[in-house]
Image (cartoon, rainbow, N blue to C red):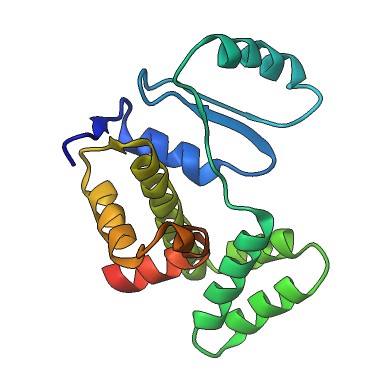
Length: 181
């Protein structure tokens, strides 16, 4: 689009910021300068976050990085597990999600199964690509990167109205994975 401006920053770095954003981090990006700020939320990091907040309120261009809410990530993990072929790995993932501490147990199962973990990383990376593309489209930003263009093409193909954007994020990683394969 003619009114889009080029985002400052390297795609892999900004993508990693979006991929690692969570309810447990404070993540911000300034697409005009390329600066990024990310810190895990904790009492020890509080002074660092407070110092950054001064910049956040005194400088223009900073945006909080949207993250996948826990419920949406849980749904994505469940969809991933259900998409796997029948077998022990699928059964272990579904049992992990049904028990206590499902996020930790899901990661533990993946650590024992490197092939499955690679497949999950692909889904998680593609979900972050779509989330970043949606953010950029909303801010009239663009990246000159093939992964970004693929994600934008996917979003535009699936995004019939602004109301669908929220539901798109939940299913985006698996849908994009299927489209790329």
